Length: 133
Length: 117
Image 1 (tube, helix red, strand yellow):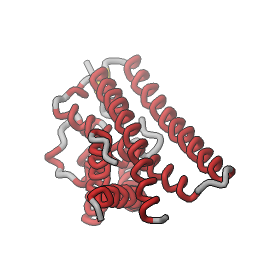
Image 2 (cartoon, chains in turn blue, brown; image 1 turned 180 degrees about the vertical axis):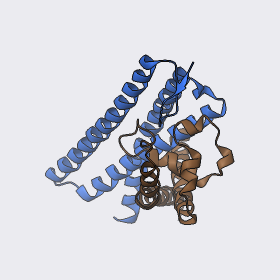
Image 3 (cartoon, one colour; image 1 turned 120 degrees about the vertical axis):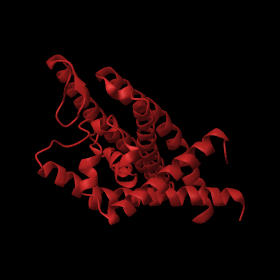
Image 4 (cartoon, one colour; image 1 turned 30 degrees about the vertical axis):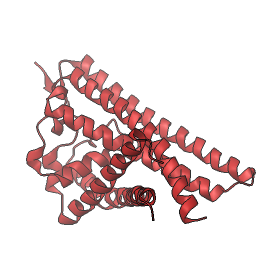
């Protein structure tokens, strides 16, 4: 008999499945923090390199901020929209359905985030050159 | 002004509005609602989230009517719990985030698909 995990509310069959859900949630939690930290570090380094090369570091801050905000926002918004679509067809009704839903949200969200990083940087740099210069 | 400047302006304005509304909704609405839920003795919703992305889940739940969500949605974030502590100000903040965030995504995807600029 499946029971509901307190808080998460996912139907689990036994203790083993419950531990799997907890491990999966914790992994996602740490992975998310890690990805954001690495991304932030790389972007900060890029701004610093531009500064060292006597480049337009203010422009680089705007461009990297556009990329980071665009990627993060698009990743989560798209991920949420995918998750919502899947709940419409009740795909997340079981443990594995839930895992597929989260996995698909992450993959599609990541693709959207990558695209938005590229577009965010491109559009922000173009806007900077036309407005500020 | 050419259409590309309008397009870029719309993207940048929606991006900045999304960033600001993320902070405002997160601090003034999500934090308040989450605190109230946890004060009931319940665990923090969306345990998989480590970076604050659950804010989008809260924004959807606050902005849209309760009838929109089904039992499966409730397994991430209980609609009834969130609605119990939602005020009109929370709904306005959520809608500002929803409109600016989705507009930014749509404009960004259009730029990627049609290789604008």
